[in-house]
Image (cartoon, rainbow, N blue to C red; front, side, top):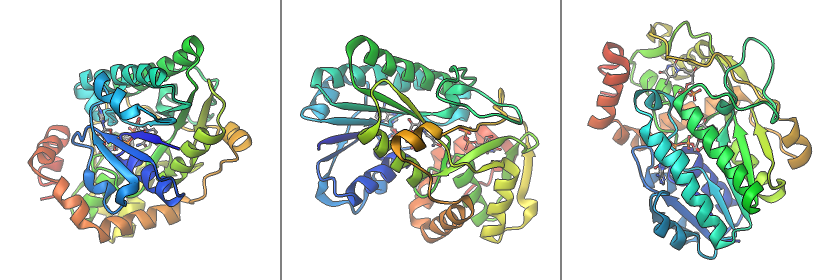
Amino acid sequence: MRIVVTGAAGFIGSNLVRLLCAEGEDELVALDALTYAGNPANLDGLGDRVRFVRADIRDAGLMADALAGAQAVLHLAAESHVDRSIRDARGFLETNVIGTQVLLDTARAAGVERFVQVSTDEVYGSLGESGQFTEDSPPAPRSPYAASKAAADLLALAHHTTHGLPVVVTRCSNNYGPYQFPEKLIPLTIVRALAGEPVPVYGDGRNVRDWIHVEDHCRGILAALRHGRPGRVYNFGGGAERTNLEMVRAILRLTGAPADLVRFVADRPGHDFRYAVDAGRSRSELDWVPRTDLETGLAETVRWYRDHPGWWRPLLGPEYQAYIRRQYGGVGADAGG
Ligand code: NAD
Ligand code: TYD
């Protein structure tokens, strides 16, 4: 089956392409514009079963070429970092909304048999101390990133309703694992802890995320591709809720860094308090369950970053340093240096 993966040089996309290769798929198109978050090194060593195409999903002509003859599209390309969306949302709307629209139109014209829109539980908004989102929870996004993803999901579902495009939407909780760009909480904390640098924690560190290993998410995306019902939404979650402070402290322990590296910094505006999903539908309809428990997965992830400084050190160049200074001011001034 010819499968096009968009965002293939990013964190989840590259893990997904690796899983597809391991499962024996041999007609893969790995498509990516290579923004700051896309890294061709993430696809190293995959050989000639993968054809890499550097293209922007907003370019209808290039998308028509890339999707010609494809049976399936796994759509992951996106601007993905909440903090960047708070500073400047425009690129989020351009890629996540307009880009998705272009891709949906192209997929319809190309007659693809399955379009998986890879989305996030952040489209549901924020929870209090209890409760879980189900697929029937209404979208109530609170950050520009989440709003752009909600718009994209709804467009994808509208293409199913209006045009009969066989769309499946997946909504997953927070991923961790290898090849994640060091701007999100887990890889940022790991690389700073390994360098002995202060780790910024927003607010009081009590916000809760449900962590899932990236490989479990990728198995879910493939289950949705193969067994999902068109027009339907599937939640994936790790069932591993932790406060941010618990996660940061666990990473400091695993890296052997001192606990006093934690720095409480000004809270993120509109910071969602808690995410948690009910993944019962994915369990019953897709036969999917997460396999990696958080303690094992986090230890493996820390080990991966410790063993692969050659992967992440080159990412900490002047552009990254400028971002860290802008985002964290004094706390991050020496980040990665
Ligand atoms: P990422 O930022 O690591 O990767 C995104 C990739 O998309 C990058 O390689 C980037 O170069 C590419 N890209 C950006 N704009 C593009 C454009 N206009 N055209 C082509 N390629 C473009 O993000 P990620 O964490 O791997 O997330 C992948 C997808 O999964 C996103 O759609 C995200 O919303 C979703 N998701 C992420 C998480 C998470 O915890 N990271 C959880 C649930 C869902
Ligand atoms: P993040 O990894 O950005 O993912 P998301 O916002 O999509 O959930 O953040 C995870 C949690 O960690 C979130 O509650 C914000 C918090 N956080 C910090 O406390 N400090 C940081 O430097 C970052 C990047 C995130």
